[in-house]
Amino acid sequence: MDHMRYPIGIQTFSKIIKGGYTYVDKTAYIKELLSQGQFIFLSRPRRFGKSLLLSTLEAYFEGYRDLFKGLAVDSMDLDWTPSPVLRFDFNAENFSLENGLECLLKRLLREYEEKYGISGVEDTIAGRFSQLIRKATETTGRNVVILVDEYDKPLLDIEENKELFEKNQRILKSFFGNLKSMDRYIRFAFITGVARFSKVSIFSDLNNLKDISMENTYADICGWTEDELVGRFRSGIMSLAEEREEGFEATLAALRDYYDGYLFTPKGSRLYNPFSVLNALDSRTIKPYWFETGTPTFLARWVRNNGIDPREINGVEATYDELVSVGFDELDPVPLMFQTGYLTIWNYDAESDLYELRFPNREVEIGFFKHLLRWYAPLTSTRGSGLEFTAFKKDLAKGEIGSFMERLATLLKDLPGEDHCESTYRAVTYLLTVLCGVPAVAEHHGYKGRSDIEVCTGRFVYVFEFKYNRSVAEAMTQIEDRDYAGRYAKDPRKVYLIAANYDERKEKRGLQYEIAEYSRQ
Image (tube, rainbow, N blue to C red):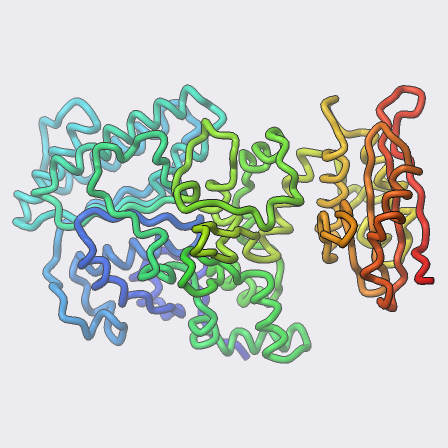
């Protein structure tokens, strides 16, 4: 029986330690951080442990050494003298309100002003922040520590509202611009967020800010390695294995497939998402957890509206400069997809200095594609509609490709908008097949050309070729002449060739298709 206490949703270090919750020790990084400099920035995805890291730093700087008994930092030669800590948490506020950011900052500043007996304050938020830093130092005789959690949430939450976005950008720029001029009063400053908006100049006045997001030393500072997972949660994994009626290794492999895979530097470790793992062990069910906590509406919209082929997302390449630079005025969503955790480093080629990016795991891939599909097609979950997702999945599993194509024809007929092309219909089909939980390969390179989509189930293989305003015969001829199915010649599974053409001309409008069984002779 599993008697572990899982700190689901608990981001306060003292509560985890005092409450007897299982804690993965990351305190060894405190000494390393103190040696790095005065102003530090870390980018990591949401719900990946940044808030807990800040709470751990807060407890250290406030001198609560008893909380660290038995942890790595307890045996290190460090200064435990308490410092005044100013923490600004942007997690909980509703920034869609016109003055949401201003109200939050004013409230937090007022609380600290009362704590340090400050009256007759400055008129502006920036002025009040400067005064607070100076007065807190003078009152305590110790330089202040500034901790900022999810600084970019006031931007990410309202990216569609250009006017409010620019307003919040100006407020943040003014707010953080104080730090450099007040550095003689500051012991340490640590800022976290999902993305570094280098192109909106929030940190332009803080040119001594050290970004550790892609440094090998801090690759594993948030998230869990497999050694950490197994070392701290073995009994929980065993309980999950019993629930799933399978062995420990099989369950660990399932956890790895669904929640592991994040890599933030080429020399780092593959990391598990803590939030998802904790929920899976606690509920004894492997399913999406992290993705359901926030829908990446703007990312899905960027991919759809900018004509990016979903088949090309997995395996996309980028330079270092592209990965660390984010701006909403650009058409390329890849940098932000990397920083928000929807893509991760899969491979790095030092010679070309190119990073290959892929979805880190099944949870992210399925979640993102499911959300993206809604921007293409009005797929419903209503039973009996003929378009429910499970129906497509059953068709592929049972080899009922004719039924699959009939459903697809109905779905494509109702696509919203008018500006469609061949890539639109390929994208919808590819998204559907991936969401059916079967391996789908886009544009497999054969010796005579590239097929559009190849899908493999346990008993069947499907080779698709799509045309637009042309003909089914042309598509089938291409499949056969270029021998797209040739690599399955010795495969025991039944192989189907699917030639499809979507015709927008009024007299023929709709999806026409032909299905043929591959002959190995």
